[in-house]
Amino acid sequence: MSFAVDISLCRHCGCCASGCVCGLIRLPESGVPYIEPSRQDSCVHCGHCIAVCPEGAIRLDGMSAGQLEETGAPLSAAAAGRWLKARRAIRNFRPEAPDKALLRSALDVAAYAPTAHNAREVGYTILHGRPQVEALLQDTVELMEAHGLYAGHTRNVRNGNDTLFRGASCLILIHAPERILSETDCATAAAYLELILPSLGLGSCWAGMLLEACAHGSPAGLDLPEGHKLYAALMVGTPAVSYRRIPFRSAPVCLWK
Image (cartoon, rainbow, N blue to C red; front, side, top):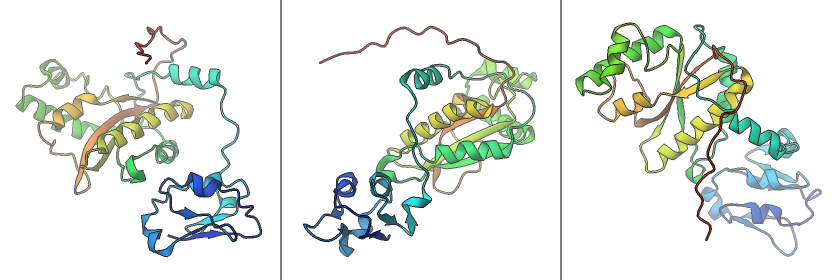
């Protein structure tokens, strides 16, 4: 890693040191902030130091503050709340596969989902097109039938009614190395995708039955990177219907202590 401070811009406010999640940045009484060479390998490259510096004085891993996107003003609580509450699981898709450029835009956002220790080891395998999804669908049905899972759904698929993947022409498989917090990392990435996709005219739904099937084995066509395990999967496509209202939800059960 490389960490440098522009002495002409730094005003010694200490924001970079307090913002460093690993406590690596030293703030001398005189001079500029620095990281001891012996501790540089402990940096997790989260970028908090360069993001928080009010003067844009820090250069991290060869990138200056001027090369980064500004955060802009936050959404109002009302706008953010309405967007989150309006999210719906989509189970009726138009037949065409979503545009790859739109999917890349969504995946670029999902890359910012938090990961444990900032490991950023979440991977994505995109089945783009109904033939690709159909191949995994048939393999999944065979696995389910072998283990007596969801007989009604497997029978539906055999009869031409896809109630597993809902006729979607795109499936995003979200995977990571098999570690204790990888499931949380992948689920969080999936949630980011769920929330950004509607802004691109797309919708999604968790392919939960695929995950349940994978608990009993691996469908023949499931080709993931070596050492990775499937932790989340989304059916993705253009919604065939539009939701115009936010349905009622009961107030959450909270324990205040």
